[in-house]
Image (cartoon, rainbow, N blue to C red; front, side):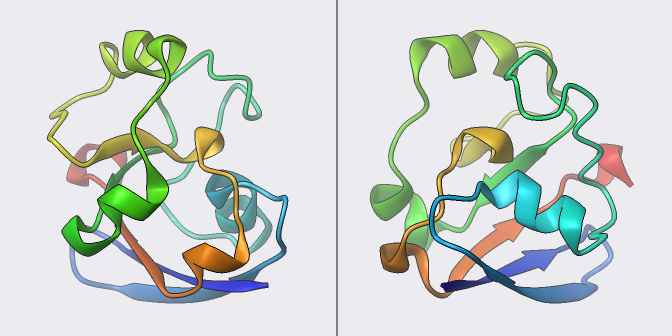
Length: 106
């Protein structure tokens, strides 16, 4: 299990317990975190689960795959910490992860 903190553009904080093997997106959807729409259900076919990984976590989370980078082209306001939360697998090493949800997804 890992605790993940989601922060909305207006600074609302949602702390979620996520099972190892799940995705950051699926944990958000199961816990009704606003701003994570996940229209494609986690198939990396849209950008409605776009998040900004906190600077302190970017190395642990890793870089996006080429397919994810292609989908991020469809996201609004992509930044250096941008990831699709459907592509981040939860592991024990992500306990404490902090991600921010872009304002455009509010």
